[in-house]
Image 1 (tube, rainbow, N blue to C red):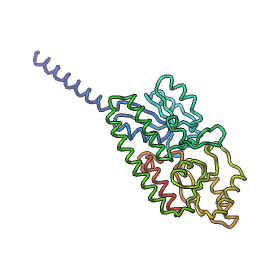
Image 2: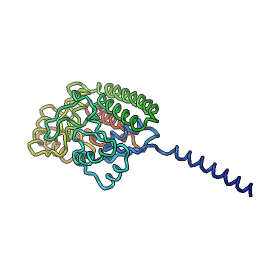
Image 3: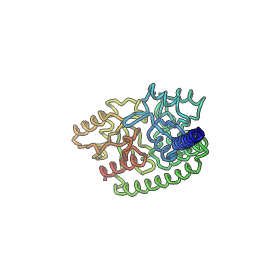
Length: 304
């Protein structure tokens, strides 16, 4: 009998150790972001300590996005919520206000130096929300995310800070790559024409003149006059390539190409750029660095 009890005690101790080890292997935090851009930063900083999910996947337009019942469940279960802010997710602001009463909810755009933000002429937008296209601004987002995660999960402070240092080096390398490739394009050919005005931060930081058919938000409608003005701009500047976006219909840009053709000017689609959404998870373009590099390569190869 004593031998049996001894075996039982030993098994219970072993089981307890096993359960404890299993618990420590689990992710320690549950974090939700709206866009893939922000979720990727959290994954880079959080490493193995966090379970991270993005509400908006490839091809999703955040300007028009409305939360689903599944999204609401994810937000309810999250310990921390990050969103872009600057009115990018305009349909979800009431939800964020409600959630912020019970947990940490951070608009990363609110943490940026306002002097570095581009003003908006679109109704309802004070600033251009497409901040991820300026790598220096994105470093400020990385800093804001890191500080928030350290405050929420102080036990992993050292890991978070180390991961931040590593990631910032990646962003420095990305900036150097962008500058090197862009140097292949003659200055007068650095004109980027896209479906909507998502690339102004890119243009300012990388030395491009940028034109978009629609405004900063895809909620803004375009008309025949807008198409005609874009056609005239292409013809007058002898632009040979324009770009479509993964999260915006290409219908309008095809109308621009047809309009230019009627004026005897041939324009081609130079490729598809990632603007308001990144690529599929598990692909290079599904990361911020991979997305940005894809855009650089696509633009340079079409315009040089």
